[in-house]
Length: 567
Image 1 (tube, rainbow, N blue to C red):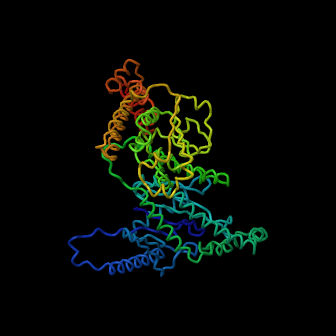
Image 2: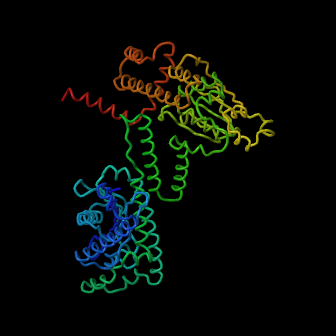
Image 3: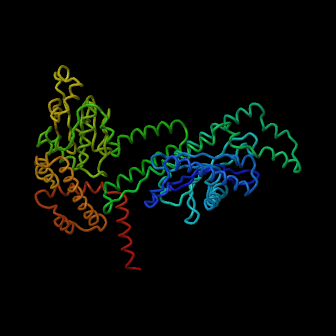
């Protein structure tokens, strides 16, 4: 990541000053013409280390010449070589010293330091803030206080700034930077608080100051000896700067690798947009919990984080559960039978709640993973395994333990399908050893071990449609098509019907057309015929899975088109 991290301090004698700075040096691109005379890798490493040390010494000496520094303004002595870390994977070198090695970066960091400790602060003067421009770079700044028994107000003002030219990247990294910088700041504050408490226990400064005689002539001399305490003396940390170098170097590396550019052919799909929106909401929720104070907030945050592990984004975690599993839609169809599979898939596509009840969470979650592929990501609301019933508005996939009772109003509903995998009790106790189950590993094991009973109060026939299900069953019944080919076929069918959903949403919800016009659109989309009722239900249900980005973009475009004629 092309960024720079710096620790800044507001000195009571000299104002805002940069204390410590870490920057990343990327290796130069290899030149084919110079391969013949290229030095050995070991020589290059030693030359790079000497170059980094020389740059650090020149930077420190030049900084000393720029102005007088007191103890509180200085982190490393002028003769200190600084700190250098090398990333073996990428060859990037992370250099840490008091000031940047380039004069251009020195002025940029200096301006960011002054602004972060003067005008660009959040309410309360402690917390994160973002500022900057294209010319001087963009800055993520987090100001904080460090306890000092000899300072004015018993605290000193510091800030950690990250400077980068990429505004979008820095804004997208806000939750990540805030989370990890707070860990560093809290470590500094807790260490300094221990030193502060010990000093106050020996000699309470508040009583000393109240009993001392104040005069304008003596005050500057009294303050001059107390205004130059370094951060090392405030924390009593012997390897403070080495620890900050490790922390800042890791932050630059991790922040640069967490977001990567991916080439997409064409516009992003609705599933991609929904996944991005959910990830953004999760990061915002985590940052909100971390900003809350108190033990209750922490416990709720942990519950929220554990609950997010069952989200659609984290379904791969179910693969670690032991036991038998469904591997594909074709495997599920073979185990349940063609008739029961069609009824189950019909309820999934129509948006009805599907409940699985059994003692094997891994099997139930694998069934949900397979069935989720029938729906757009935005239509999936899953509770993989629960000890109590959850209402249909909370989830359309629900896994329950065997002893959970289904409410009467749910079991009699025609918008619910209930599957109870009942084990052969005799075979479970005598034949079904767990090691034999896992060692066999065949796809037929699920059918031989479990018996599935499917029931629903729905009386509507499911053999007519929808059209998507009819085409999918043709592909599943064709044994000449592999599982991967069937998966790509399903993906194409979902994209085809998702495009129809977009057209119907624009036509009916945004434009507000009548029933006759909507019927003409359905005929144009190929949604009429014997499967018309099921096709319409599918289209309306899938409308709920459209991303907020698409809906907002569509409404903005329509409103802009309505204003343009009047303008």
